[in-house]
Length: 258
Image (tube, rainbow, N blue to C red; front, top):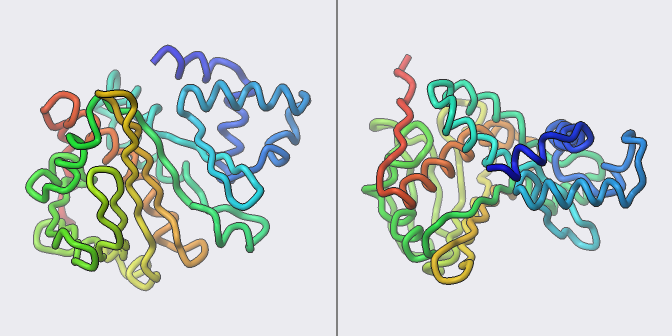
């Protein structure tokens, strides 16, 4: 974790993360403004943040967009202040935001992108990711799932007997890519949104490691769902990493039903 703390040590790098917290998916030209350093200087700081996996980038047309990745920060919190994990996860809810400004670009851009590295093969991660019996060991709020594991098959996540997320399998390419639609049902405001899309990509790194890239996009604008999901995914990814690497679940108690 030394690279994370080194990246956070510089005030300009913290300011760049703050800028992405306020408005995710920014171009280099956007991030240059207001820091009093050259374009090259901003690029240098962004490379350090990318090396620490605090920032991830995506190409959209000719533009390179920068996204805040809060997962490493949550991993640090889980290590030393795990009793504050639930409030921390709630704080992360605002870290990933919808791209603003040019709406034509925003319609094409991913809204939430997270990356993390896991000391396991894609096949080992895939085996857990596609095993409904293991879903509550890593999913947000310890949700369970029922899935028809075929393209077009239904996928549903439950809190108790109540469906919280419903969708369908769009693509199933073991052990590297899983895509499913995502229609939130936990409250009336999100239930009225059009379905969005979740894409899991498992990229092998050598013989025994994997880069997980999770993209949640295809929102119909700045929806209630797009604003709500930023807190749950970092927790789920951290718990998935712990489960795959150690074989032991990292349990965060689900909130009591009202």
